[in-house]
Length: 295
Image (tube, rainbow, N blue to C red; front, side, top):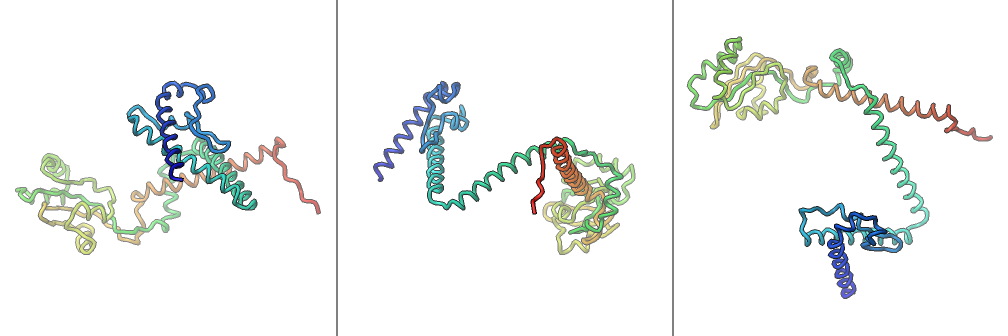
């Protein structure tokens, strides 16, 4: 058996190297014109065109031979196992598997076609008013899983000399304060001045390392100014507003989720409508009939 296996491997490698030498010619011809049969299992054939997509110009001959050899062996093993399965499995199982394969094929085709129609036919524009109405009707379903905050913050080097001025500007945040902070922003390691944006506590903790889930109750409070320090720097933050876990999530925080939910609902509605219209049209054109069962 070992001698036979060795012979088969040598034969496969010879075919592979022959295939590689003929590849420039064979790839330009149909399999019956090029004689491009690489392997056979029973009545099933593996052709040059089945293997050529695996090979690229940047793969050397030895690697190409290995790739093709492995592909041939895997293909042969599948074909041989399939033949054995057809012989040894019961007729009932074979019929059941054939039905599953047919159902799966039909599902793939119809899903791809229906998805294309739904994507083309669904209105993807969702207005602010539609979002607001949906939020008002469903907001009990959008409760926060963690605290979210609006804040301004900066991270300063430990040696920064005018920390007091930066703290005052973060607290007051007038137009002059904003201009001042922008003018020295090059000295900040991190910063966030967009205080209209809701940010999850986990992200804030990641940005301000001295904060953690054990002390967030102490520091993440509405209208509180925070000054923390560690070995890397000094962290200054002005907490503008806070919503706690289990509170109703702010509309702006869940807006991306709301848009996706609304869009998915539209797609489902369009898909149902499409199926109904297809059936109605087929009945009208006498392509689809349901025969009443006789008593």
